[in-house]
Image (cartoon, rainbow, N blue to C red; front, side, top):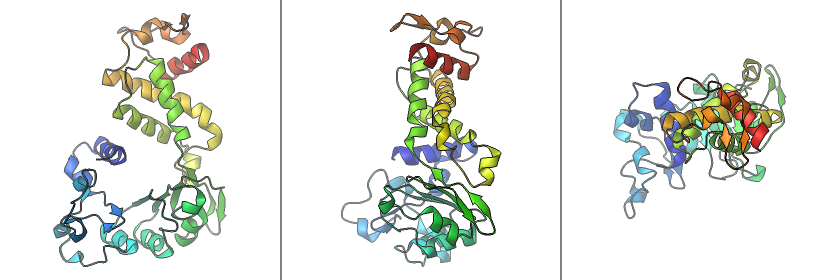
Amino acid sequence: ETDTFFFIVSAMMDSEPELTMQEARARIWLVDSKGLVYQNRPEDKLKGLSSDKAPFAVDLATLGGSQSFDKNDLAQIVKASQCTVLVGAAAIPKAFTKSVITQMASQNKNPVIFALSNPTSKAECTAFEAYEWSGGRAIFASGTKFDDLTVKGVGLRAPGFANNAFIFPGIALGSLAVGATKVTDKMFLAAAVTLAALVTEEQLQKGAVYPPTSTIKESAVFVGAGVAAAAVDEGVAREGVCGSGFISATGAKVPSLDGGGADDTCTNWEACVRDFAKTCL
């Protein structure tokens, strides 16, 4: 399965420990150029499904009498799946039509709409369309940066900017701070979870699921702290790096790293990463 699917499945299983991998995968419905990805799809008879899609092929038999819908109509797929989150990343402009978003809004109090394709000409929908067609109730994020909007009867809405600038600097900073030998999937997942925690209650009230772009630099420190802690948990951090604070490349000593815990590990990951950046970068 692709990295994206892995992270979604891992996140679900982390939040619901009793959930099996098969159950988590069954919650994800994929749509490709041939429509809904489902088991024994006629279009796949010759070559079969690719290995990354096969684990997520929908078993239509589990739907009972609800399987007679158009497998190429996204609005009908949304209705059949009763999905709460809709993610677009195929660069198909205007794929999220009014009928698709109104269907999402009819089955969810706050439908999550992620139109991740960019530039704007490739976006599945705009922020205005998502809010307009959902009655201002959508939780919206996109690969293109849209300005905040005031929706009549709802108030200010803050579209999220789903850009890797929120993740990659923190991944690098946290990995370097602990001398990680490699970057694991769990470290990426820790980065995502940490970033989500940075969204304030005030921002959540505006429908935001990403911090403001003005906080990208500061966010990297907190994301780096989460990544550093995950690296230690994963066993890929360089032994003693957080206790000694010695950085061989510069010969510098990082202040907060010198006072490690009893097991020679850092006791404050935020301070660890912040001082590493200040001293060594």
